[in-house]
Amino acid sequence: MTTTLTNTDGGTVLGSIVLVNAGRDKSFEPLKKHIKLLEQRYDDKIRQQFGIQTKALTANEANYLIGFRDFDEIRNRCLKAEKETYLRLLSKGIK
Image 1 (spheres, helix red, strand yellow):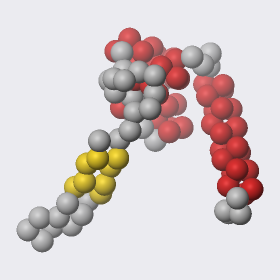
Image 2: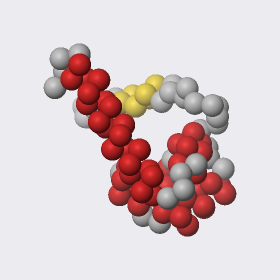
Image 3: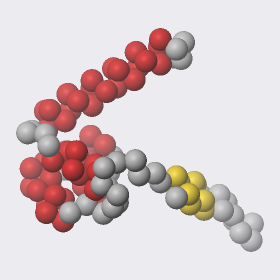
């Protein structure tokens, strides 16, 4: 699905969004109980880490985060992913 916010009548392009769903759950909307549980467990930490409100997570994102025992595991996984991405790009000559 692609959405483009275009200019009309001399307006300004606001942005462009591409949504893809290659996850296991074909629904974008997460279970309410998962969102509630993530909010109870992590409060504002998801917004601080990812820059997104817990209620705005997709079903696949919420399902993934539910599997972590605590927020330190989530932070550590993020750091590991960033390092892996950096090393992969570096190996291709991209800095």
